[in-house]
Amino acid sequence: MKIAIDVDDVVADLMPAWLKRLNKAHGTPADVSILRRYDFWEEPEFNGLDAETALRALTPDIYDEVHVLPGTFLALDILKELNHEVVFLSKCYTKEMALAKMDWIHRHGLSDHGNLISVGKWRGAGYEVKEECRFNILIDDSVENCLAWERHAAGQSPRRALLVARPHNEKAGYETKLAIYSSLEEAVGYFGLIGHHELRYNKVKEALQAPRLLPIDWGNAVSTEMARIESDPLGVPQHDKGAKLDAGKPRVGLMTRGFSRALMAVAGVSTYGAKKYTDDGWMEVPNGVERYTDALHRHLLQEVSEGPIDPESGMRHAAQVAWNALARLELMLREIDNDSL
Image 1 (cartoon, one colour):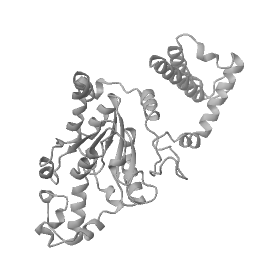
Image 2 (spheres, one colour; image 1 turned 90 degrees about the vertical axis):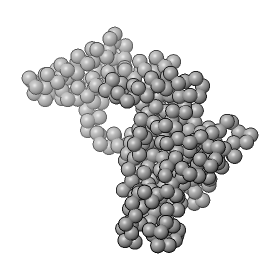
Image 3 (cartoon, one colour; image 1 turned 30 degrees about the horizontal axis):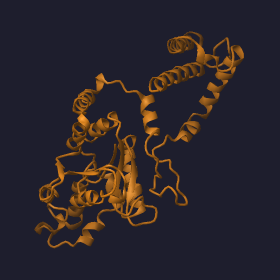
Image 4 (cartoon, helix red, strand yellow; image 1 turned 90 degrees about the horizontal axis):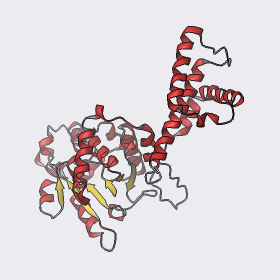
């Protein structure tokens, strides 16, 4: 299932950071209990502060002060384990705000779960309004967005909006017929109920809450990330000039630039092995993972006892260690790919 998740006040705790900025700028003593409505600046504590002034405080650098809401990572991990496709769908008034949110998502490790699609009327935004997105589910803290999403469902595949209740929207939410949840984590429980997947959902949640018992399969994580919906990191529509659908993809250039000497040394080991045996013959070695693991450890021990250079090949033991590490990893990933067929 395709799921669009709002950023502000669903995964990012924006409102308290916004309040803190307004307090500092205007010398007001308001605390978080004032956050009972979207336009909280109209409360008496702010002495008639107007909306334009309040919104000016929402500059891109505010995301340097915004924290991830509790339960976010568990909720996103559950969705990943249940094989749902996720994007972060967030209103951005400018390209600079979109870049700031994208950077916040990346810095907090959320880009492992989905890419940002920006919503706004500036050139390059993914959509003008959220309901244009053709995903199945919207999880949002805006009552208006949720209602528009469900109204826009006519004639399309089934769509549902789930409202995350925060102090600023709770009253308005309960006046509607929307499905209301107290947090993203609770909203994700909805996916355990549909399609009779409750048992699997509970098992996944239990396993993720005990992460030391759940080995991380990095190979599968990379494969899953590559299979996600492709999008432009700046929200440029696919068929517009300048679009490049590479958001969230591994930045391979970081590896080649950062490890150019090491990779050349490993390439030397590959060339030496091909001359000694045959091109790519290592792929057919029985029990390859176990044997290349042993070879890796042998070279580590020989580096300590003999020095940095392997007397047989004339190459560094460290290069041999790296080659064996890559060989065993490659075979492991191929086993995963074969198992998924």
